[in-house]
Each structure stands twice: as C-alpha cells, then as structure tokens.
Image 1 (cartoon, rainbow, N blue to C red):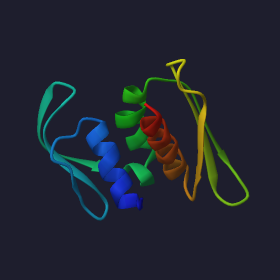
Image 2: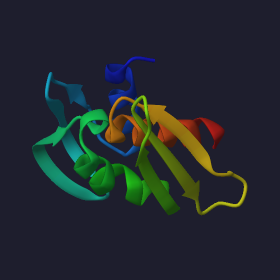
Image 3: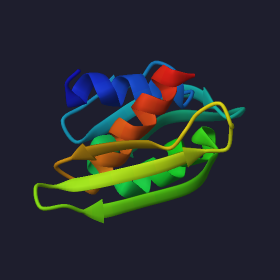
Length: 110
C-alpha cells in the first residue's frame, strides 16, 4: 500500500466523508463526529503528526504511544485500550508515517 492509499484508508476509517487527496492534504465534505463541515482541508496524515493526533489518535483509543528515532528512520509503538490487541509497532521514514503504519496495523487486527 502506498502513502496515498494509506492516507485515504485512514481518512475513511476516521469518518471523513468523500475524502479527496490533494498533493499536500485531504479535502473532505459532509460531517465528521456528528459535526457538519463544509469543505475542510487536513494535512496528509503520513506527513503530519498534528493531523494524526487531531483526527486518528482519538478514534484509535490508545493507552500509550511511543515514537522514536532509529538509525534508518522512525519507529512507533501503540497500545490500544482493548485487551484483544497487543502492542503494535511499525517503522517509517518520518514519525507521522511510522504512527500511521502502526494505526493501520491495528485497524487490520480489529
């Protein structure tokens, strides 16, 4: 899965309606979390920890998040609140990508 597909999958999982990926971000219309918005622009999740923490982390219901620098990039560990899912980790070129890949693994394990 490339970054564009990952961003679209995460946007849909987060509840974005009709997400459109642009080069620098995601535009969506409709409602999210019960609130009606017009067109809203959000940075690409794989490029922005701010966007991840605003839109993905609350939905993921995580007890713990660790992001760290490795010799070859970045790593991320997440621990979902559910006891059925163990600690999930992943690695990426940026901290945001590492976190997105870990959340994607969690989604796939649901």
